Image 1 (cartoon, helix red, strand yellow):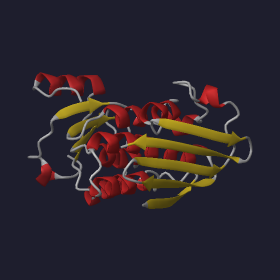
Image 2 (spheres, rainbow over the protein chains, first blue to last red):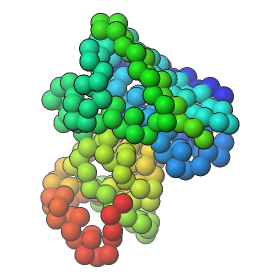
Image 3 (cartoon, rainbow over the protein chains, first blue to last red):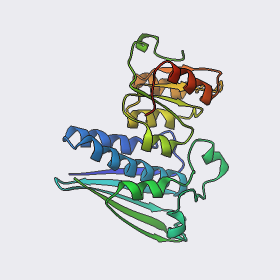
Image 4 (cartoon, one colour):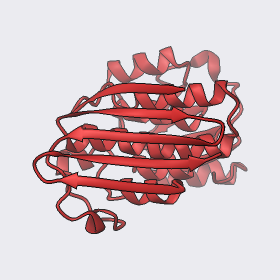
Length: 136
Length: 100
């Protein structure tokens, strides 16, 4: 089963809706709560990364009996140094984003902790593709 | 009480106090009461995601109408206090509520 959502940069009123829908479906198909929790941390952080940093993108969740794969693809500024972005506390989010409770530099580290497999490809001034898998 | 007078008998199983969305997402447990100074709409989406049973806004913060409306749709009670986060959590802890 595949779920695909369009995500708009800076649209904070709708941000998180895609992850919430993915959560509902995972619960409906009977995925264990601990796995749902990890998948949702990945989906929400990836969705919010698009909202905060990119112009627009898509969030896709593919669900099979063996794994949940989340792919976040965006057109945006890209990540110049992925290993730096993976460090806890490193953030490029501006102050007004931080005031909303984001931009603490925990997004990608949390995704890494929650996923069993993670791959990030990024090109500066073009965009980023994040693929994370959680095994069931 | 901002919203949900009729939901006050709802039981919470733990408490979580935080002003960071990412940390709340990772550590808040289902059934918890969320205490926060964040009043933007993402706090409601977060509460839904972590299955929190209510939100207490601290430090005199009050959410806007759009946020209250979303809470109403999600049937999520909203409370508010002028107390700081530390004190609010302390009172609940003394009353027997434990951390997420």
